[in-house]
Image (cartoon, rainbow, N blue to C red; front, side, top):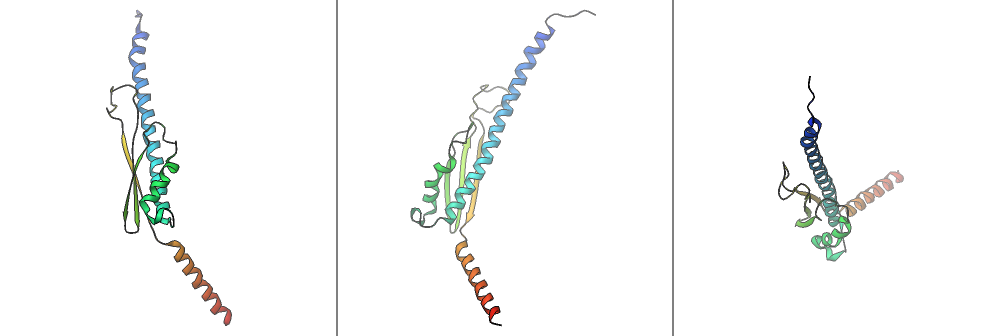
Length: 152
């Protein structure tokens, strides 16, 4: 059996770049998943805070979201663009949508990598149920009920 010189070099020159490209694609996809999860959480928290916000920014739900957006988003979106937030108010329901993009410029346009990166969107919605008023009403009913039972 005759050994061929350069066999290992040929294998390494073909396989190693492909392994590196797959690794970079996996890393880009993890940026996508991380950004999507964090954006989903942040949009819901913004919608919830706007739904219960009273006395702040004149009770305008969209302005409450706008005032709290920079504090909530912070600097935790690495590997992605900073999300753009859009707010929609329908009656007592607040819908907050966030849009961002994975910034992966490594590898150019090789293999399966899209030209523009991966866009993702998340939305959170919350209704203003006026919980404080309901809690006070239930507490008042409880006080009346215990007062009636104590009289017996």
